[in-house]
Length: 124
Image 1 (cartoon, one colour):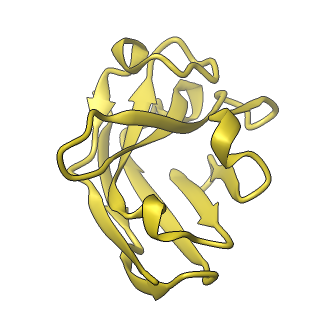
Image 2: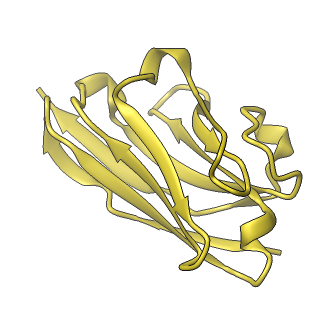
Protein backbone atom coordinates (compact mmCIF):
# COMPACT_ATOMS: atom_id res chain seq x y z
CA UNK A 1 0.00 0.00 0.00
CA UNK A 2 1.31 3.42 -0.96
CA UNK A 3 0.97 6.23 1.55
CA UNK A 4 0.71 9.81 0.34
CA UNK A 5 1.35 13.19 1.92
CA UNK A 6 0.49 16.44 0.15
CA UNK A 7 2.17 19.80 0.68
CA UNK A 8 2.40 23.19 -0.96
CA UNK A 9 -1.07 24.52 -0.40
CA UNK A 10 -1.73 27.98 0.93
CA UNK A 11 -3.26 31.38 0.27
CA UNK A 12 -2.62 33.05 -3.07
CA UNK A 13 -4.11 35.96 -4.94
CA UNK A 14 -6.09 35.45 -8.10
CA UNK A 15 -3.77 35.15 -11.07
CA UNK A 16 -1.02 33.63 -8.96
CA UNK A 17 0.54 30.19 -8.99
CA UNK A 18 1.09 27.32 -6.61
CA UNK A 19 2.89 24.02 -6.90
CA UNK A 20 1.50 21.13 -4.92
CA UNK A 21 3.69 18.19 -4.04
CA UNK A 22 2.75 14.63 -3.17
CA UNK A 23 5.31 12.51 -1.34
CA UNK A 24 4.76 8.77 -1.66
CA UNK A 25 6.07 5.98 0.49
CA UNK A 26 6.55 2.45 -0.75
CA UNK A 27 8.73 0.73 -3.31
CA UNK A 28 5.94 0.28 -5.83
CA UNK A 29 4.95 3.92 -6.39
CA UNK A 30 6.66 3.87 -9.78
CA UNK A 31 4.06 1.36 -11.00
CA UNK A 32 1.05 3.34 -9.80
CA UNK A 33 -0.99 5.85 -11.67
CA UNK A 34 -1.34 9.11 -9.80
CA UNK A 35 -4.05 11.70 -9.68
CA UNK A 36 -5.18 14.93 -8.11
CA UNK A 37 -8.72 15.63 -7.00
CA UNK A 38 -10.23 18.58 -5.21
CA UNK A 39 -13.21 19.28 -3.01
CA UNK A 40 -14.64 22.70 -2.34
CA UNK A 41 -16.79 23.37 0.69
CA UNK A 42 -20.28 22.05 0.13
CA UNK A 43 -19.39 20.37 -3.16
CA UNK A 44 -18.50 16.88 -4.26
CA UNK A 45 -14.94 15.79 -4.85
CA UNK A 46 -13.95 16.38 -8.47
CA UNK A 47 -11.22 15.14 -10.75
CA UNK A 48 -8.38 17.54 -11.52
CA UNK A 49 -5.63 15.62 -13.32
CA UNK A 50 -3.99 12.22 -13.59
CA UNK A 51 -0.75 10.76 -14.88
CA UNK A 52 0.18 7.20 -15.74
CA UNK A 53 2.94 5.17 -14.10
CA UNK A 54 5.70 6.35 -16.44
CA UNK A 55 4.62 9.95 -16.73
CA UNK A 56 4.09 9.54 -20.44
CA UNK A 57 0.32 9.99 -20.41
CA UNK A 58 -1.67 12.71 -18.70
CA UNK A 59 -5.36 13.41 -18.33
CA UNK A 60 -7.00 16.68 -17.27
CA UNK A 61 -10.42 17.94 -16.40
CA UNK A 62 -11.53 19.88 -19.47
CA UNK A 63 -12.08 23.07 -17.49
CA UNK A 64 -8.51 23.06 -16.19
CA UNK A 65 -6.55 22.28 -19.33
CA UNK A 66 -3.91 24.89 -20.02
CA UNK A 67 -3.71 26.15 -16.43
CA UNK A 68 -2.75 23.03 -14.47
CA UNK A 69 0.10 20.62 -15.16
CA UNK A 70 0.62 17.26 -13.50
CA UNK A 71 4.03 15.60 -13.35
CA UNK A 72 5.94 12.99 -11.37
CA UNK A 73 9.47 11.99 -10.47
CA UNK A 74 9.58 8.26 -9.80
CA UNK A 75 13.20 8.40 -8.69
CA UNK A 76 12.11 10.66 -5.82
CA UNK A 77 8.69 9.05 -5.23
CA UNK A 78 7.10 12.43 -5.83
CA UNK A 79 4.15 13.80 -7.72
CA UNK A 80 3.38 17.41 -8.52
CA UNK A 81 0.57 19.69 -9.61
CA UNK A 82 1.57 23.06 -11.01
CA UNK A 83 -1.34 25.48 -10.89
CA UNK A 84 -1.16 28.76 -12.80
CA UNK A 85 -3.56 31.66 -13.33
CA UNK A 86 -5.45 30.64 -10.24
CA UNK A 87 -9.04 31.77 -9.76
CA UNK A 88 -11.16 32.06 -6.63
CA UNK A 89 -13.19 29.09 -7.86
CA UNK A 90 -10.06 26.95 -7.58
CA UNK A 91 -10.33 27.26 -3.80
CA UNK A 92 -10.62 23.74 -2.38
CA UNK A 93 -8.86 21.00 -0.52
CA UNK A 94 -6.61 19.20 -3.00
CA UNK A 95 -5.99 15.48 -2.65
CA UNK A 96 -3.30 13.31 -4.12
CA UNK A 97 -4.25 9.72 -4.98
CA UNK A 98 -2.52 6.60 -6.30
CA UNK A 99 -3.98 3.86 -8.48
CA UNK A 100 -2.63 0.30 -8.78
CA UNK A 101 -3.85 0.03 -12.35
CA UNK A 102 -1.13 2.44 -13.41
CA UNK A 103 -3.04 4.45 -15.99
CA UNK A 104 -4.08 8.09 -16.04
CA UNK A 105 -7.62 7.43 -14.93
CA UNK A 106 -10.13 10.07 -13.88
CA UNK A 107 -12.39 7.75 -11.89
CA UNK A 108 -11.98 8.10 -8.14
CA UNK A 109 -12.96 4.45 -7.65
CA UNK A 110 -9.77 3.41 -9.48
CA UNK A 111 -7.61 4.97 -6.77
CA UNK A 112 -6.53 2.84 -3.83
CA UNK A 113 -4.60 5.31 -1.73
CA UNK A 114 -5.41 8.90 -0.78
CA UNK A 115 -3.56 11.63 1.02
CA UNK A 116 -5.05 13.81 3.73
CA UNK A 117 -5.35 16.85 1.49
CA UNK A 118 -3.89 20.33 1.37
CA UNK A 119 -5.92 23.54 1.42
CA UNK A 120 -5.64 25.96 -1.48
CA UNK A 121 -7.32 29.32 -1.06
CA UNK A 122 -7.41 31.86 -3.88
CA UNK A 123 -8.41 35.39 -2.93
CA UNK A 124 -9.99 37.81 -5.36
